[in-house]
Image: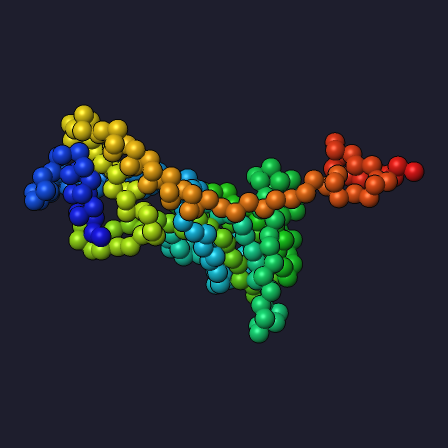
Length: 245
């Protein structure tokens, strides 16, 4: 579906546009801005994100800090969130070995006293989450060729113009159509046309895609329950401190 058809369908939900009427260019421009704002807000919430993407980056040179963003060292659109990071050991090109990186907070990064230590394989990364490009800081600094991976929220599709058809995962068009109609109501002096039925349809459509996008949760057993019967688990230190004998 193209952007103009979707916006027109939303405006018909609130009786701003008749069944056979064509949207005016001024109205289309206003609605396009509201649609872009809505989708931008959706990309900041995990349950609107339909996939986690694994991105592989090949650095052009070895250094400690790489920018991730359009025209950055890692040239890709800046993701809203990265869930995990990895480094790919290329010592065996036939079977590259991907290893997870510990993601640090700014306090943990600041606590590293010597930051320019070099090593074959980085172990940690601090993402400062800057905009428009993230700065990914690796420690130790790699001194042999490696690749990097990030696992990031997939961005929602956007329209390049009014007439190009784009695709979304199942359920999204209905959620966008009804949710956009609610947001267009005040802008087009049609708040009274935002009926409980329309709100219910929007809520049901949004809940449907959120259920589909809900991530799997890793369940872990409390360490205390994994100890031998004779062991004593100290919940304050998360350590086994002795035995009961």
